Length: 91
Image 1 (tube, one colour):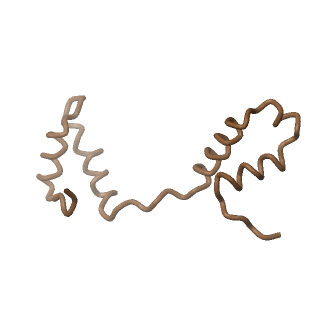
Image 2: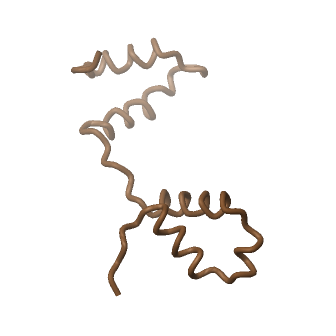
């Protein structure tokens, strides 16, 4: 048996092939498609995080405790800039 790519369409076909007809009769086509998309999302590895993202996350979670909610974008920018984080590239 050859493996098919893990796509929402392939998962939807597998759902329709494997689910008992009685269960499928209770689901609309949209519900089956949504189930396939949800299963695809759950089974797909998330993209890798950009380099340094873990360090920035640590700074935010450890150091933003000094700020009262809601934390403003300016407070986040000041904290990151004080720690040497610089924006590169972009617009």
